[in-house]
Length: 195
Image 1 (cartoon, helix red, strand yellow):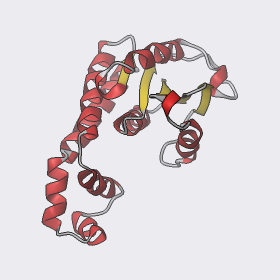
Image 2 (cartoon, helix red, strand yellow; image 1 turned 120 degrees about the vertical axis):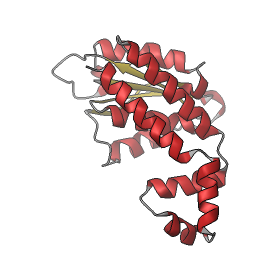
Image 3 (cartoon, helix red, strand yellow; image 1 turned 135 degrees about the vertical axis):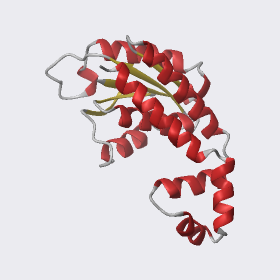
Image 4 (cartoon, one colour; image 1 turned 30 degrees about the horizontal axis):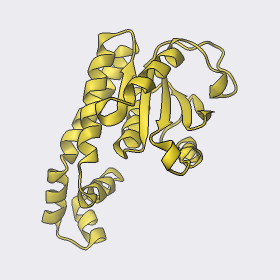
């Protein structure tokens, strides 16, 4: 099981983003959660999933934006599951707490804690992908997000009013395809760490 503890960075100098982020994550039908994200402290939220792909996808989406530190805890949780995440307990919750603390100073603001050495390997890959994503230009990110939505490069070009070659160039400069493959590796490592 994967517990994500997410802490808003520099929350004292910014507006509170927790409610809007929780609402978006909890309503996303592509990412079913075992326990919905719940506010656990002033600027922190926590959610539970049994999917490595969902855990890595949420972690990368949040950390890549630069506004969140994300800790992923891997391990068991006390059954039966409680009605809300705040009432959860178990190894994965404890590890997520340690991970989010480490994420605050980590490259890419992602940390993973699990009993398997694969957790550390997953963390390294996730940190790398998050760090690369933060350095993308706005134009590169815009093209990549449209490709992620399922549009072809031709459709992205039409949508953005640019040439297909320009779309390809933006994806290339942002290392979009390489980061997607690396994220798949991170997901596999997380799966392995959870067995």
